[in-house]
Length: 205
Ligand code: ZN
Image (cartoon, rainbow, N blue to C red; front, side, top):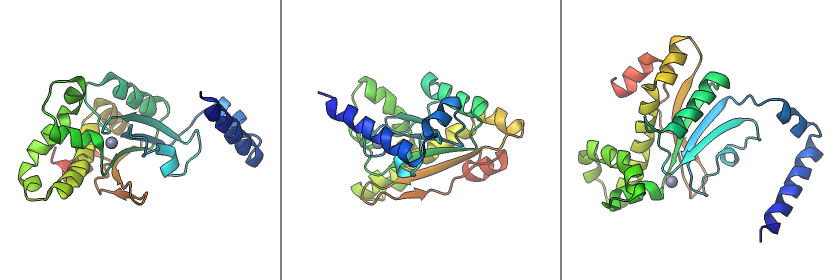
């Protein structure tokens, strides 16, 4: 059933080595990505493809609605490895308009596992209720996708792993981006944090 995928894989591998015969041999030796991407699991938002990077150039963590929950051991493990071992220089939190996770957080009030996972987005919506209530449904949804990204950048900026890196003088920038499904463009949301001073400026913490 998956023969097509295996065939795709062989063709892809051959293309890579045709262009650069040493490509895979170099990757076996080490990975030294400069970027950690924290994005949504949505199949329409493929991390390395969007920014046209090769294998080995970006460390990636994806979950539903690109969350950075302070207690999530999977996300924290990725963060720790990326910052302390790989010493990435940039962490990109990348949300996207039309995010099903963000929409579900607005529409659902059940008690399933996914509702539990999405509860931080409901908190973001609650904290910005006044602003969101002034928008129509479409704009409200888009705005919440952006606010969710900013909240995750904020979460990163108070994370002990990030704080330790800054304290030790390790260059590390946090960025918030949002991706548009309809044209493939990413937009920088202007919440780049490279120090505690930046954090104070953007988030007042
Ligand atoms: Zn999504």
